[in-house]
Length: 144
Ligand SMILES: [Zn+2]
Ligand SMILES: [Zn+2]
Image (cartoon, helix red, strand yellow):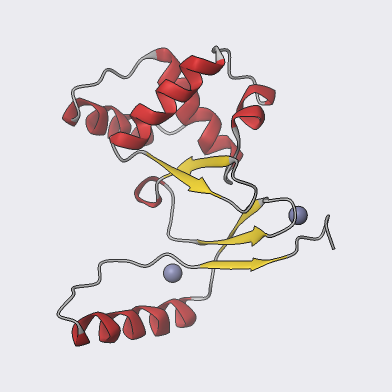
């Protein structure tokens, strides 16, 4: 996995006075390889060699430093992904039946429209919008 990614995460952890342990590095690699939000069982299936309690703790520490984002889905099972700063700006397709979350990229023109609308909505309330999060709820192919 790119050394840039690890350099950035190491820096984020240092800012929160945490070490970049092998276990945390492995989780960052697995999340980067997955390229989509994954559950703890997904991480174990993908080869995370850590106890469940270490997984929770390491993910919480990576979340605190801003490297990882924790998503709550319709099934109340947490999913994890690398923060957008480490991947790219995207949105989510959330299945209301099984809780699966898939990434979706919107076109640049749609993003531009969303940015402008968000900026205007914020301005009316004296609020400076930095980014937006936007999810599409529905039924995935497997559940349809
Ligand atoms: Zn589904
Ligand atoms: Zn967007």
